[in-house]
Image (cartoon, helix red, strand yellow):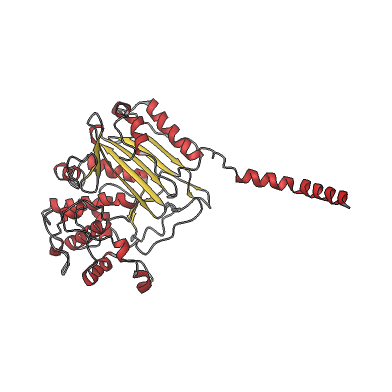
Length: 393
């Protein structure tokens, strides 16, 4: 009897062994096949201060990240009006296996703040507002006195984070929240501010949402329409819009944002608040944006330079903030301007190096993994500064 039981166990184990092998193979992470290389080097190669070897290093970095499921997105490096490196890794929609293309559109998250800053500076340039104007000049009954536009731009307002004081809104409205509701909440409920105006730097999404509302008040139109008319259209950014644009839901180029490799990020009740986030853009369009700034198409250089001054923190801080841009200097005094973003399945990064008229763009539609390390990118492109560049710029 015991012998028969042993034999039965043996044959049962033998029978399920192939299934166990298949299960094991399925559980082991394999490198993903790298997509076809899409690199464009302009015929104006004399423009580029970076070498072909550096291009190969950048490509190798992202190929490695993609193979091991660390990166799904698009990368672009350009200089002057030409593209030095451009490649898309992975899918716009994982379930449908829709590949990313040059026209794929990503949520820019906090990179949107630089668009808001330029909108304010355009109005300043047209003498429609002053940077020293206080918020209550544009928003009646605004309860926090002494807060200027400059303080909002440099994150020195001390205002509370609307992500927290609007948490009860879905219970009341069961829909998305707009900028005017954020303001109504501040006027009626007066949530406690973090500190008095201009005391210190503290990153503030609330400040940039208020800036978008000021643009609306001064321009007499919605923030969405202002950005389209004064930025997207003159720069030829045909694959760009805000969350509130009617084009967003119907655009086949819009990527799907993922919280994890398979979990889709659904629209959030805070998505309707613009200014601090909410701009969607393709890598090529984001390159057009930065080239538009370099070439003074939508704003004069003398005005734009205000955005690149270190004003958020004391000047002795190695990393600082201007108007919608972060900044630091390398060992050789190369100025790096940049901003990153992270919101609902998307991560974004733009870096600009004015001395080389260069632009680096990295956009991801999966937020579960860390963003590409800025340190590594800059070590490749500026190897002389390797010892000085910090891990988190």
